[in-house]
Amino acid sequence: MKILLLADDLMSRVRIESHWKKAGAQLLKNDSAEPDLIVVDLGARDALERLRRLRDAHPAIDILAFGPHVDADAFRQAKAAGATQLVARSKVVEKVLGRIAAGG
Image (tube, rainbow, N blue to C red; front, side, top):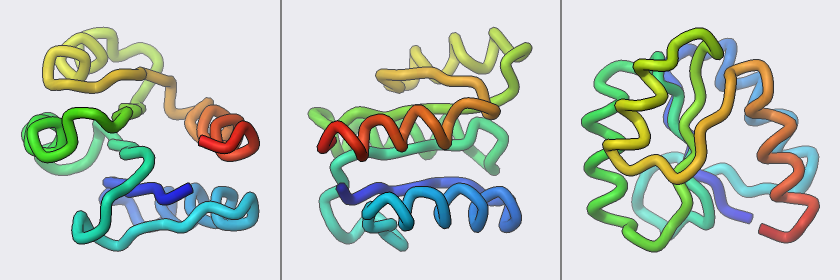
């Protein structure tokens, strides 16, 4: 599975990527290849605008947005911007591991 992860926080990014790589995922460095899944950290700089651009560029690909579980407004905005799935920050690793294990 090829995953495009948009997350600005280096420590979180490294932690998340290491779990997914161990499970066999390929993490894309940019939007140059066609991802199987796009994952967006709602705490990232310009997250909603980047999410909109990715939705326009990849209309058929699932976009999973994650953030603090208490930020219902950010989740509503992400859904409106084109996210197909929303998950609390504490559950994003496990959610994507489940998709990797299921083959996509």
